[in-house]
Image 1 (cartoon, one colour):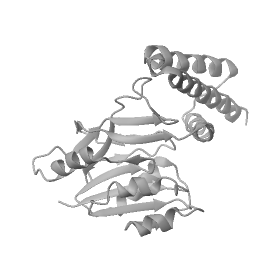
Image 2 (cartoon, rainbow, N blue to C red):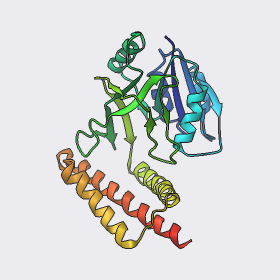
Image 3 (cartoon, helix red, strand yellow):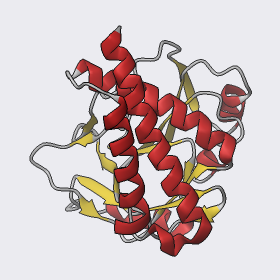
Length: 249
């Protein structure tokens, strides 16, 4: 069985080598570039990936579906540029695709880092993500952000090995991503008829902090658990403020 790895990327020169190098054993690696102005494309090609271009940005879900449509393998592994596969997970994936009776869709726990620290609580572990499936067995939702894997009629099986993920390397990335995701999230909510206000922004921000830090035991992640809870709360707060602005327009 042939495995295709698909990755969407834009200006990921700092991380693309680690991602693609971790799946150099795959039969095919497809990188769909969204208009990079750094060395992403050159680095990906140097590592043997087939690089295609799609500079118009339709959102995460639609862009990932474009990449899926370019895959030719019997199985597809979808990765983000800030993720990588260790030897244990690679062995587990190879075992699945070599088994004719294997389930068609698989999820795996994701081991995420926040500014260098692996987070074991705060809702970040085990954080199962569906990333491996027989080609055609699943697709992504067309959401602008926080896209979901759709596999109607199939319940994903679970791999025991974890996918590594560097969510944020530093606080500049935290702020940048919070701004972009809150903007896209507000636009998506507005399109669905939702409305925002200052009161809702405050309440959702407070609830997000309490859920991350208290209910999801973020305090057990130490000071970075506190910082993550604060940044999550800020993201929710600004998403509802931006939603309010959409309503006024």
